Each structure stands twice: as structure tokens, then as C-alpha cells.
Length: 147
Image 1 (cartoon, rainbow, N blue to C red):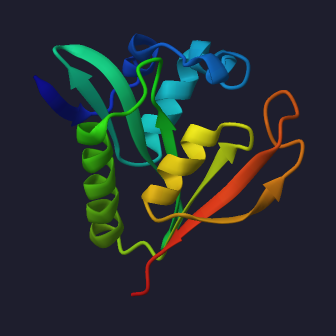
Image 2 (tube, rainbow, N blue to C red):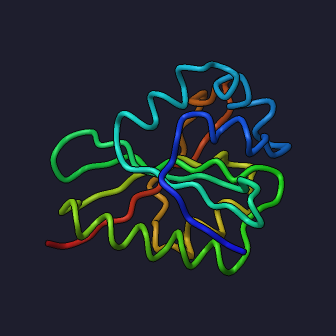
């Protein structure tokens, strides 16, 4: 059974890092304040499959009309059902909070994440050299909604 529940700080530890995350954001997940920060700064949701947390995503509000998207998808990856939930949830949150821009970053060498974020409608804006925890290059993406 597939369920979407409001994100709770402890969910992030249940998901487990994907291979590409272990070397980059893996240390953040071990910090108990990281999940609390995500939960405090905007709406988030956790996907469960048969009672097991498989991914979480949400928004961090920066200022009126602008939010930073985050996602932690764990080792399983994302299937069609999860993708539809993410797409529909993002659209609903953008409308509900009158967001004109949602932005995010993707590890430049992570091809699957680039495909997913582009399918969600995000457009690449450029590379961000030395942006990652260990100096990795990321690509900035933005989803613009005309109000």
C-alpha cells in the first residue's frame, strides 16, 4: 500500500541514503537538527510503501513567492506512482502558497536526477562549481509559475 504522510524529522533516517548521497549529503542526515530544519522551514511529505519510508520531499520558504525544493529519495529510487505524487504535490503547493519560483540543485553527475527534475518542469539555469559538501559541482534548476 502506498501512502503520503506529512514529513517528520525522524523520517529522514528511516529512508537510508542512496549511493550518490552517502558521500555528499549523508553527513547531514546523521545530524539530528537537519530533519528538524527541513520540517520547520516549509511543508514536506514522506512516501511510504507497505509501511516503509521510501522517500521524502518538501519546500523551504525563502521569502514570499520563492521556495527551495528538497528531496531525499533513498536507495529505492522513484517509480511512476511516487513521481505523480511529487508532481501533483508540487503543483498544489505552488498554487496554495502563490509561489512564482521554486528552485533546486542537482549533483551534476547524477543523470537520473536531472531527468526526473526536468520531467517535473524545472529548467537548468547553470552550473554551481564547488557548491557541494565536498566541493562537487551542482546544476541549479528553477520552475517558474506565472501568476
